[in-house]
Each structure stands twice: as structure tokens, then as C-alpha cells.
Image 1: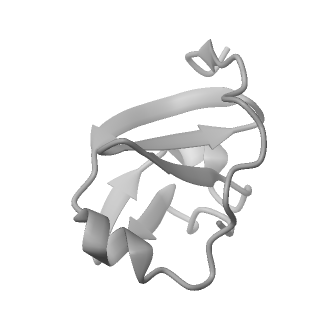
Image 2: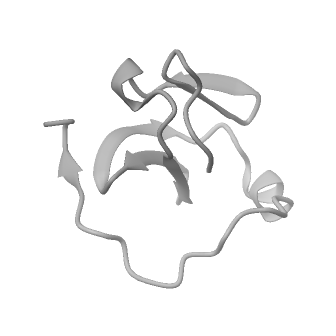
Length: 79
């Protein structure tokens, strides 16, 4: 996914999700996994939310990349 907007928000499934002002303009990654949305930046897990997308809607996403490796080990927090 692209950068967070200048106020630290990203758009996903028609909703805005805060990732923190300190990530404004920085690239974040949104990973859809078994009903969860995991938002990360620089291998730090920013938040994990229930996915608003059904399996059918996820299958229709055309510009996403499929995971080719196991989940990375995340650090929690932003420190």
C-alpha cells in the first residue's frame, strides 16, 4: 500500500484507519489474513483489526500482492 496521508490515516475498504501522525507520508503495508487486517510499517505492527471485507470481496482485489513467505516476526509498538 502507499503512504499514509498527511494526518496519519490510510484508506481501506472505504474506511479511514489511523496509523499515527508519525507515519504520515510513510509507506505502510496492509495485510489481509483470515478475517484480520494487519497494518505494519518498517516491520512494526501498528494495529490489527477485524477485516470489513468478505472472502468474496477479497478475491476481487486486483492490485494486491499474494504473500509468498511466512509471516514476519513483528515488533509491537512504535519505539
